[in-house]
Length: 242
Image 1 (cartoon, rainbow, N blue to C red):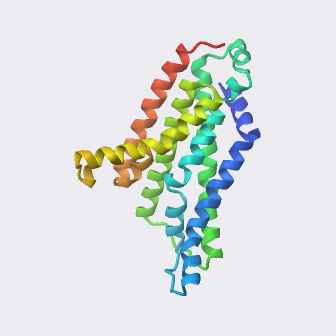
Image 2 (tube, rainbow, N blue to C red):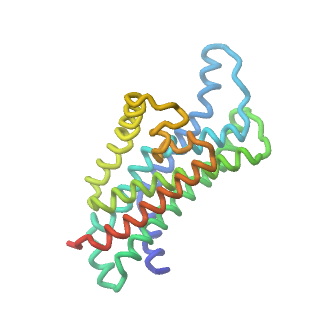
Image 3 (spheres, one colour):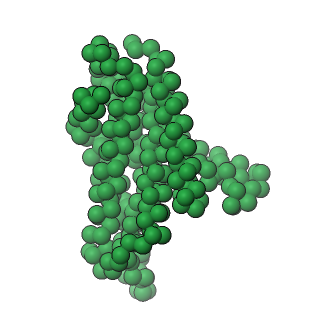
């Protein structure tokens, strides 16, 4: 298993899409922190002072990761199919179960690295933007955990879709369509059914899970992660290797 995980991590770190998606995610999230100051300078109004805690919560939300995460996961999870290397991996005695698990672990490691880099960058952005560095409090810490598990849950959903479709082009299209249309569809359902905001169906979609209280958000994310891994293992074991 260790050798297989090393192989998947090797694929991860040599894949350009990983670095491109990381750069874009962190660039756009940094811009979201700078935006209020830019707008205030244009409109000649006084901007609220950004604190490091606020920068963290603005930069590390699942919303910042969603679309680019869909692209990265779709390309990475279907890499061995696209490169026609899956047969060779299986021929070396690795089970499909281990291959699937190693892919998911490698993708989680890539996301964790991006999250940590984003965490550090939030402090740098705060300093550059003339903000104030403040200590982490329990409220911010639990929210960051909720954000992290929400992002991992998102990756798990896109990973399951990519496992089912297998081909990179199809996986990429499917993940992007899910990214756009599932939130819209659930919002429409909420409107039609006239559901109250607290019980909104759309809040249970993994991309919107952090709209709930942090502990509930973490619980829902863990449910998504567990279900997608169980279903993904079943799908990968039954899939024919061509």
